[in-house]
Every structure is written in C-alpha cells, then in structure tokens.
Image 1 (tube, rainbow, N blue to C red):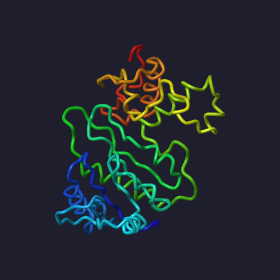
Image 2 (cartoon, one colour):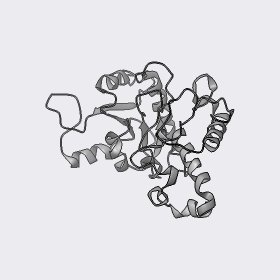
Image 3 (cartoon, helix red, strand yellow):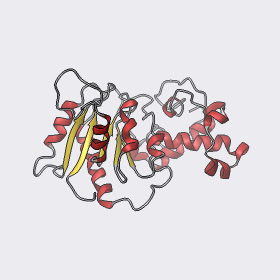
Length: 265
C-alpha cells in the first residue's frame, strides 16, 4: 500500500534482548501529531513463550504467514529472527538492525534481501566507537520515515541489482568480482551466478559472513580470520568511503579511511 496506516513489526532477537520496550517507545511516536502517526507498530516474538506478553505469537505457522502478509515494514536483527522476510508481500520494506557491536559491524544474511527483488532493504547505520550502543529510537524513527517514503513511492518493478546490499555487502561483492574476473570473466560472473562454494579460494566464507572479511586491515578494526589481498581490499574501502563519506562518523566513511588508501591499510 502507498498510504497509511503502515503496518510494522519488530522481531524479538537474542542479540538485543528484550525489544518489547523499544517497540513501546516507538509506539509513542505513532500518537496523533507524532512523526510516525501513520504507522501501526507491533512487537513479535515468533518463539513460544510461557509467560504472558503482548507479542502476536500464537505458535501457528499459518497465523505467522497471515501476520507477514499484513506487514509493510519488517524490522529484525540478523540471524534466525530475520528468516521470515522472504514471505513479505511485494513492495514491503525490510530493516536490518545489524549486529550489536561497533567492531566488524555487519548484517549477516543480507543476501536474502538482495535475492528478493520484490523487497526494499534498509540498514541501521554505522555504530559509533566506544561502548556497544543500544538502538536509538531517533535513528529508528528516521529509518521508518525512509520506509514511508519508499512505500509511498511504490514499487513498479524489480529493485536494482545491488540496491538491497549494505556497505559491507557491496564491498564484498566488488572484491569478489575483482578477485575472480580474470579466471571467469565479468560476463560469466554477471550472469552465471557461480556459487562461492564452487569457486572456493579466498572469498569462500564457509559459515562466516562478509563482515568477517572486509574489515581486515581497516583503521581501528581488529584482525580477521580471513586474509584478503591487502592492496585490493584497501583500495576498495577507500574508494567506497570517498564516494560515501557521510556513512561513517566524522564524515570518514563507513570504513573510516576518509577516502584515502595507504598501503598496508
């Protein structure tokens, strides 16, 4: 739908503990005159709970699908909690809250949104350094306002390739193209959809995710178990930050390079 009330659900997730209180804070913004007055926001805990709560959980999979079919905005942290996004209706918005940390920040299974051209994906922005931050209501309000804009705009056709990836996913994808283009050619990589498990090599993640790869050697980030080509990954990070300085603290870009590549970084 292109007009409110827009129906949003926040999925309970072990990475953030109890999100019910956060939902209640956002619900206050839906009061008349509030910034989200045309939203209806509910908290969902898909797992059965012995205690009473205001969750929409019933334990019935059919009911789960009914809830999803009536949802315009799906808000979840990574992991199992976001798996139902595939069942959202055409044109819906998926908001990925990311992992609750400020180092190696990522979004885990963002390929699910990228592989669903009938959805639009938004990502909670880069955390600031220091203590592991809580989710900020003001930031979520801005994300929901952007979701409103996209819903009002409508979806006339499949979303553009790459538009449902986060900065982390975009950088990893670019690295994969550069790393394998000589062996396979860009046309094959564009259309062949070669599985990384078939290619193996440095970009095969196994049970890991791009955030365990793209930060290796990045400023103020700990090392990673993967060892990408330091020149290539460093140049790609600097290029991305040069194009999008606003995505990181102090306009240094998501990867903190200020758009400048230095060998070894």
